[in-house]
Image (cartoon, rainbow, N blue to C red; front, side, top):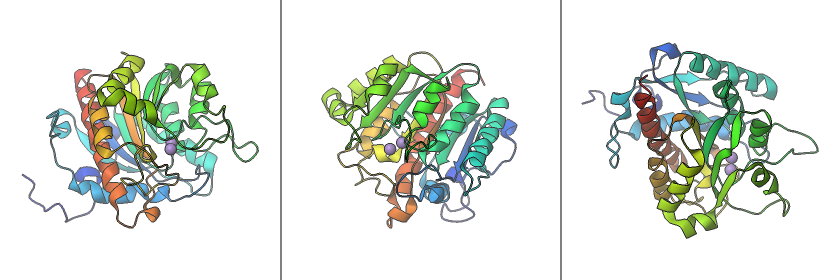
Length: 309
Ligand code: MN
Ligand code: MN
């Protein structure tokens, strides 16, 4: 039992030790406080700090799967990537280098953004020589080509870049919870033409949680799979603290069940992104994000342990 009360001491992710060397751990929890890829309402740079704070509420054992990630794997808080808030390309490089060191150590990363663009340099570091599959929770597909007359690196374009760069195998990508008004009727044609599987929120409710889980497992298959969780995939009643809220979204309970349903996939890393505390006076979005992070940590730890690392 913990001797220090959970409201005391310096906040780290899930009250884990703060460690510098990724080789000393199996799973690294990492903050990426960058929101320079945001196209509308910024603020996700403040995500990691508030998620650390609210993650002190998280205990040790998953009450459904009974997975105990801190027992299965050595987990630690690796601190934040040093980004440059006024230099997007430099920040992407710094993020890729940081996660490159993590991967070189054989350590699996689980990070908190930051806007969704931070996932691009993470995938650059993780994909290496083989593209990965992805289970992606989001109200948006994030596969627009460019914004503002040609800007290609934004939180709405990163997964098109990731497919173009060969980081993602589009046939092994499933996007869950997509909804919201489009820029154009053909917005989703490109990802569908690549073979990405989009489960809109309407189809989520037609399939039910178990149906969505079965479909996600079928698409991701046996290969290495990344889990990316944009909190705007949730309904804004649960996660108002985000830059691009869309009503009619997933409940927290549905998202938890779906993440638990990924146990057994070869999960190599994950993230929770788009937590923007300035839009959330109650702070609940950060608690929600910390809880989703714990759910991902459980299935990631199970995968990491089963690989014999
Ligand atoms: Mn997104
Ligand atoms: Mn989104």
